[in-house]
Image (cartoon, rainbow, N blue to C red; front, side):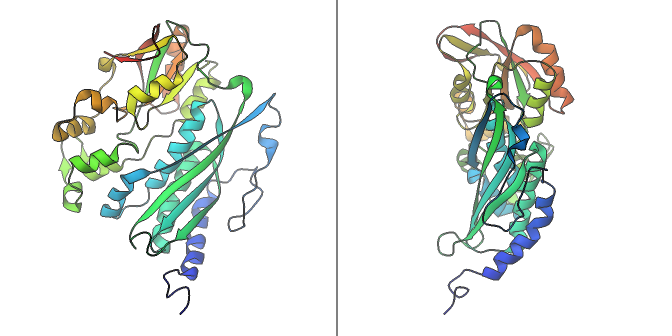
Length: 341
């Protein structure tokens, strides 16, 4: 008896690392001081030595049950983008710039080519957010996960000068809410998605005219990364007063998180076009509108609040970064919370 017969292939692990390296190389920053394969990742503090009061911000998350669709379709090169996005978007919400990322893959069996596909997506997410992929872990866990399944999670660290932290404390009535478009369902609410749509390869590969793609492609569309859009707003000279990443819990849970007491967000549902995947989901699942807005991003992945005088400048900056922005509402005095009208 040896470790391989027990289900853990050490040689496959070595091969996985070798296949990853070409993808990881694309994410490197000058501050990275170590090579992949060591026991830890080192990152120089020179990146923020000129800040008045450098403050670290961090985020950790996973992809969730969206991975089930990747298993069914045997498509593993985009879920890594989701993993990075879920972490770095939270950092950007605080005004932070992501510095580096680490991933964790746990699998029933290490298939090096599949692991490399997963990491290629992680690397692409890091490229999109200017974060270095400085390390990670691939854990082969036979008997714990089925051979063809895995879990994917990650952790990111960023930095912001304390004076530039986005806290929402200076919000006032009359401030305007901008919504930045999502790419679809992103990486939340898939336990409900999997109850509504048949989780079978044939069903997921069915083309729908209203989607302009197959159901599986629409659902697997990777989460938007908003780091560059928010940086563009900052570089335009506009101060973002508050920011909310619309993830699990939709509008009703996430928007209030950016508000101080005594401020209420009022969002107009007709201020932008809800993507067809959400209309299809609601119709086929017979899901009430309130539940949809309480579960999904409904086409808006990030909400930012700016002074009314800065709206056009902020919107132009977001669009210059390649994203679509809408004026979706405003801040009013009232009980802390959100009104969708």
